[in-house]
Each structure stands twice: as C-alpha cells, then as structure tokens.
Amino acid sequence: MTVRPHPARARRAALLVLLIALVLGTATALGGPAQAAGVGTPDGLQPQGGVTDVNPVLSWSPVKGATSYDVQVSANGDYSSPVYDQGTVNTHATPTEQLPMTKLYWRVRARKDGETGGWANGSFSRNKLAGPTLLAPDDGATLAQPSQAPLLRWNPVAGATSYTVEVDKGATPDWVDSRTAGTRGTSMVWAEGSQQDVGTYSWRVTATVGSGQTTFSSAARSYTIGTLGAITVTSPAPDAQVEQVVFGWNPLPGAMTYDIRVSTDDSFNTIIDQRNLRGTRFSPPKTYDVDDYWWQVRPRSMFDKAPDWTTVPVRHFQRTWEGAGAVPVLTYPANALSPTVPDDFYYQWTPARLASRYRLDVGPNQNFSPGTYDSCFTTQTTFVPFALNGPGAIGCQPGPGQVLYWRVKALDGAGSEIQGVYSAISKFVYNPGHVEVISPKSGSVDIPTLRWKPFLDAEHYRVTISWNGGAVVADTKSLSYTPTSLDPANSPFSWTVQAYDAFGTSNPIELSPPGHLQPDRDGADHGCRSPHPSRAVTVSLDHPVPGPAVGADAGSGLLQDLRRHPGQPVRLRAQRQPDVPRVDRRLLAVPERR
Image (tube, rainbow, N blue to C red; front, top):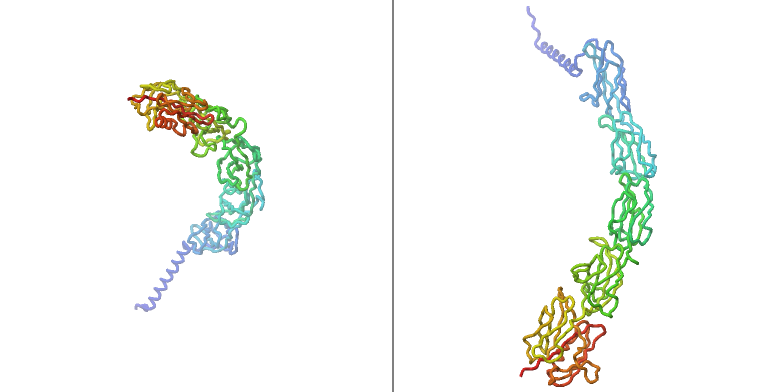
C-alpha cells in the first residue's frame, strides 16, 4: 500500500530545503570560498581597538596547519575598497603605505591546501601626525645681510615623502596671503627671493605622507631679514657745485647691483635719470642742465631686492657751467655806440669749454623780450651773417643805423641740448656806409645821367628820383642811370641811390652835408641855392633824424618851397644825433621848357 505524504507537510519541507540553500549561498558569497572543514580561524588579533600615530603591526595567533594568511585593511566595514590587501606566511603584517588617518577595519584568515578558513575581524584608529619640529633660524631671529641667508631647517617626519614650507609676512601671520614652496629635503632657502625683502616673516612646515595625506603644520616661527647696510657715497660731496657730474660710492658687501635716481626736486616728482648699475661709479653719457639736483642710490641683493626709496638718504648737488673759460666773452663788435661798426661785419667771442656749439641772440631790445630778437647757431666762435661759406649762416643780420644788443651762450650735447650761461650783453650800431655819388652835383642839366661809385657787395642799385608830389624808382646793375621821362615842369628834383646785396639787404640812405651847396651869409648852416639862377631860393628845414632814416622828407618840403617862392633865399639845416646815419640827397633842377 502506498502512503502519500500530506500536501501541506510536503510544501513545508520544500520551503525548509530552499531556505537552507539560500543561507548557505549567502554565507558563501560573503565569506568567499566555502570554508574547508578543519581550517581554523585566527584569534588574538592586535591591535584590537585603540589609537595609533603610525602604521601599526597587525598580528594574530597562528592557525594549526595553516600555510599562509590573507590580511585586509579598509576605511569602511564592508571592505568594498581595501587600502591594504596582502598575503603572508607570517603571523604579522605591517602596511608599507601610509594608512588613512581615520578609523580603520582589518581582518585576517588562514589558508591550507588552497582552502581558506573564516575571517577574524579587528579595528583601530589612526591619528593625524604632528608636523615637523623646526630647527633654525631661532624664533624671532634677525638675519644680518649678506652673511646670514634665510636658511630654514626642520627635523624629518617618519614616512614623509615631501614637505611644504609656508611663509607669511609679519610676526603674527593670518596665513591668508601666504606663499608656499615644496621640497623633498629638510631645509631650504626661498629660491626666487619673493619672500626675501627686508622685513619680518613667519614660517611653518607640513609633511606629506602617503597619497596626498599631510601632517599637522609645525609650530610657527618668525625671522627678520636685515638690511644690506648703508652705502658710503664718495662723490659728489653734499651740496657741492660741480661742472662734470660723476656719482661714486664704496662697494657694499652683499649688493649685486645698485639703483640710482636723479630728480630736479627733493620729492622726486620729476625724475630725469633712473637706472640700475653693476659698478660703483657713474657719469651720465649726456650731462645735466645747469640746475639743482637731488639723488639717491640703494643696493640690490642677490634676490633682486632693494630697500624702499623712502628709507634711502637723499643727497643734493648743483650742476654749474660758468666762470672763467665756461662762459663766452664777446670780443667783436665792441660794446659801444660810437664809433659805428662798418663792413665787413661779423660777430666774435671767446670759446667756452665743453661747448659743442653756440647760440647767438641779436635784437633791438636789451631785455631780449620774446619775439624781439633773432637767434642763430654755430659750432664756431665767429659768425658772419649771410655767409655762404665759413662760420655763419642766414640770420642775425644787423639793421643799419639802429642800436642793437647781442649775447652768446654755449650749448652742449645733441637733441635736447645742455644750456650754458649767457655772456654779458653788448651793444653796437651797424653802419655799412653809403653809395658815393659822382654826378651830377646840384645844378641844371638837360638830360641828367646819374653816376656813382661801386659799393661793397652790391648786386644791384636802386635809384629814386623825387619831386614835389611824385617820384620814380628804377633798379640797375650798372653804375649809372639816365632817366628818360622827367617833366621839366616838376623841377627841381632830388635823387638817391642805394646798393642791394644778393640777399636783398640795402645800405642806408645817408644824410650828410652836401659839399657842393654854397653856405649862406652867416656860414653857420648848410645852405643851398636853386640850381636855376632865376629861381634861387633858400629853404629852412629843421628836424631830428631818428635812426637810419629821416623822420620827414627833406626833399619834398624843400621842393615845395622852391616852387612856391621862386627867387627867394631860404636856409636848409639838417639837425642830427651823434653817430646816427644821415640821408644823402642830391638836388638838381631841370629848366622848364618854354
């Protein structure tokens, strides 16, 4: 007879078998391979709890028959990312890489003939390491320069692979704007010198252990970088007056180069020269203008650092260019209004030392007000106005018959030249002379041919024939001129002749007593009589002669009276100032045609 199991009981049995299978499968998944019967589990694990500063030695009791052990360390309890996973035949293991500085979990199991036993579990905490111990310089030390370099030293940290040095300004740092540098050693000097200005600095060191793990920072210390010392200046002396500018100072230990700056004010708002020098003596390639100057020099260290200008002494000197041999002395024309200066005309003065050329100023204003004078330049000590060759140029031509003033100063350099001191001012009157008339003298002529003597440097001549109410002007290159269109009804006539050089400059019209005129009865004045006997008159003409030209036209007044009072005697008197050129006018009468 067949016995059938109760259906409900059968279902419960099947579920029980399934549950057992799931439990066994989960155990296998969590523990790796199934534990072999007879492979024990280690015990006596150390450390088991507690705190350590370094990687600990992981140890356990041996398992009977075990041939090796598996050891794992993890920062989480599920061992999903072990930080240490090694096998060993020993009953202890020490991780060589720095373990994380946090709570850690570890476990160990035995192996035998390819089979493994169960895991034995433990845990411990790893502290963050203290930073290095600083050795030098002493806290608060002042490092004299250049003998004491800022060499930073500290004790090594076990397991450290590198160190980070942090430096901040001041003795009480906030480490906000600090600078850092890395090194594998236990000492360093800041290579680029960015933290080596004169001043106080704080510093500390952090060690790097493991993969990006760092220790605590060391205790902070401070040190002070001292100055290189004061520079001893040798030239120029304080407040000295110098003609040649030469700066000099004694070498300063520790200084690699020197900075110098020069200004025309003691606040250095207008710096005219600033440069870095390797030597201890300097003269500017182009010297300075005559003026007062203030200057400073400071050392620059091996780190290319220099003290602030506000801490550097300010020195003063005056650059001069005067005295005997430095200021031109005017020699020609002489400083006088009389006698006047004739042709050939030129300016001349004594040379000035250091001068590369000279500036000549000429004008009628003794104060040389702007716009009242001409300026000319020459490298010589003689200047000939309008000279085509030799020491001169176009310009500075004196006007005939007027009082002129002139001065000279030396210049040095090129471009923006150094200005010397002006010479004393001299005055003169230029009188190139006048054309000497040959004929006709005063008298009656039918067809006049005007003749004169040659004049120095004349390129052509200008003849002017005038009468009451009119005049005619003609230019000629010859020494004579014959007018063809004079109306005898306009008689008498006066005529003048002027010489013009190639530059268009004319000689003055000179006023001098006409020697051909007959004196009147008292003999005191220079009279004249009409060239025509029937119209003999004398006219009185009194006027001053200011400068090279006549203030009033003597000829026009004379001719008017001659025509108005025919046959009446008149007197002609020209009143003149000393040494002032005078107009030379010649009178002639042309007979009226009946």
